[in-house]
Image (cartoon, rainbow over all chains, first blue to last red; front, side, top):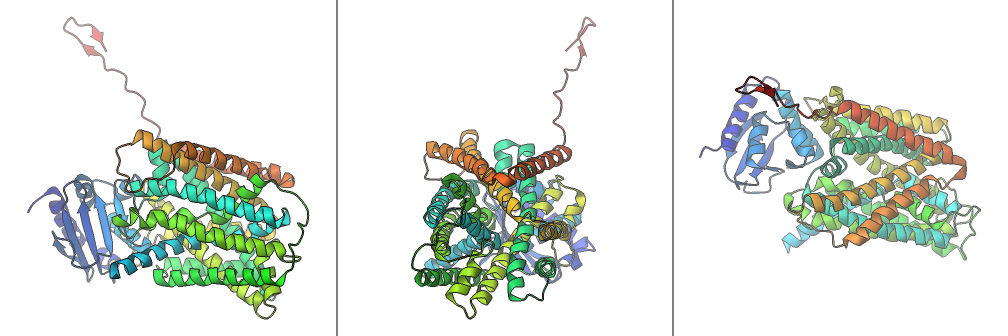
Length: 116
Length: 444
């Protein structure tokens, strides 16, 4: 199924794969991330393993996702394509990130390295 | 059953975060200072009243948290209510306050540990404590939540044990050594011992946590703190010749001559560590987010690519905290800074209440999974009361009044200056473009 959010996640995956600094940034960071769109009820599970975003599934994870990201479809799609600054969206309350402090910074660092 | 146990464990985790932020050496010292200037009964009354006010406040903050789950409260709630620049001024004030608080906290902790190990100079103790916290933060090491719950429960148990022993050991309340603070100043000072309880709001594990668990964890934590602090205040009130700086140490020594001081030094260290660690990490995260939002110099967003920690922000907050602690260790300003922090926190809490009321009017349709069960009229009174308590605290010490007012004004001026510099000017209203009409005359 192709939706703006699904497409942006696929392009996000390609960018991570191609970026030379991602291996260092994602080293040892094996996490399951749940991405939820508030307005379209889309749900995606991102699997970070072995320094890569190895899998994107359009279902919720079987167990407890360690990290949950929630926003409107448009905000999520814009964040995963680099069109929006996630920190601004987060501080404005339009993006919600449920994760430990270090995981929150790691997620933001990924976008920082990719687009800043 | 398993779900209930899981929710209870999650609630305990949130409560321990709230309590851990409030337990601090500066808080114990504030109790000692208040005790030095008021009878024990007034102090206990002040503690209980301040706890009740904070519980009412926490319900409003919980409503804001449910509107903006996971967001850093001081920036997000106040931005939604008062706009970018107003929120930024308050956020910078809070960051300055954290740095000042870190200095005072280091000082009090160093004083207590120095008492146990006189060979260690206090500046070295303060530096070592700060370095340990910074190293953990830079390394991305986080205390597991369960371990944090156990640590906080142990600290509370220690305070309760020493307080009960102190109450048992003394026959009658010791008289107040002199001075007579009015109840409003006592309550305002006592609000300070609860400060930090709201730092739990960005730490919910899931969206569902903001329906009940995070909102109710704050009043629950405050009720526990109120009971424990009231007991401690009553015991400190009965302790003969207690130290104003470290009343819990004097109490521990009187209650348990063998090992009492060591136990209280451990209490001080872990209280400092818990408050400091969460405060440093929380502030560094806020600085990092502001830098990413382009509301702070760019170096604040420097991250360690390997560990994913906000190195620039951590080092900035830690350096300023170290300077603050060295200043407090060199100059007799700890009391003035404690009062500044106490007063400014009262204003901050008043701002939260006003923000919540304003957002009910300006964003009535935004989902509120938790709605504060407090009538609006009571909340208006609460905001006025908190602002009044802030003034009472700032003016409570006649000999320090000038320095305190000057410090608050300097903090406000610095914050305002930084906010004005870091926010882009508002776009001027566009002048209508002159468009020639068919007759050749230009008109807007």
